[in-house]
Image (tube, rainbow over all chains, first blue to last red):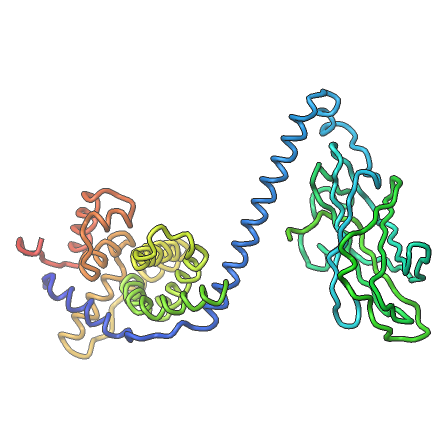
Length: 225
Length: 165
């Protein structure tokens, strides 16, 4: 039997009445929303980073119309030297140690590469090197279960691009009363002073008589910060 | 998401969720699925709260998102729907009474309509939206909305009097 439109309207109104009017936002949904907003923010920063890197590369090309420099992207790229780089640290205390990363920015006008691990040394004073046992650790991207960066273990640094080295320093006996000086030597030659490490308090003396340990990761492209 | 944004989303949810769940329920016929789709819609919109051109039109954004998510859901579940349509062709168990049975039958037929026909009918009849707005949500011309309505109502065996149209 054919029905009329009123029947359908009544049916829809009845079904609508099954849904309560008041409802509180479920916590799992709010948590998902927070994660989504955070992911969007990270993606926005990454996109901005790509734009800045592209602009920096473009400016480099504009500043150096020399064909030899422009063609460098297609030919062999030299290794970065200490003179090409500036180093900063982002370190913080964690579980009785100091951990974070050293970031190396290519301040030269040309693209260069980093591969392998740096030699990291610590100084109590400019003339007094601290004795630490250096341990090799894997890259941060592996620890984060992220995908392998393009080209790794070689890190190609355009002008303004940043490479990172994972760091964890533990058990400093006797405990230092002031921050240490950090230096990084890169494979192609030259040593770079690390700025910003003076904000990190040296690790406590957790094991008297035990050596201080310094875990150092390989060069890797810097994650978006 | 900052705390004020989280609070804003919770506030928007308490104000708009019920209506959105009703719409999703009309479109899906499944209460639990309607809840899930609306939560998905809120999560999706949470990422764009600061970019909404007209925050006062949140309900319109939400309605459009619910419709789009529902369409996406049904596209993914096309095979399942084919199965449901096959089983729906089998004899239905007797209802509780002539009126309830008739309503259940109408509800069941509504859920078996092609997605765009069902969406056009729900938006026009339940949400009482003008044709132009339904056309914008469905990304089609108003004439197409009229056509979808006409075919959908014919499928439902709804007789439209001239003063209903």
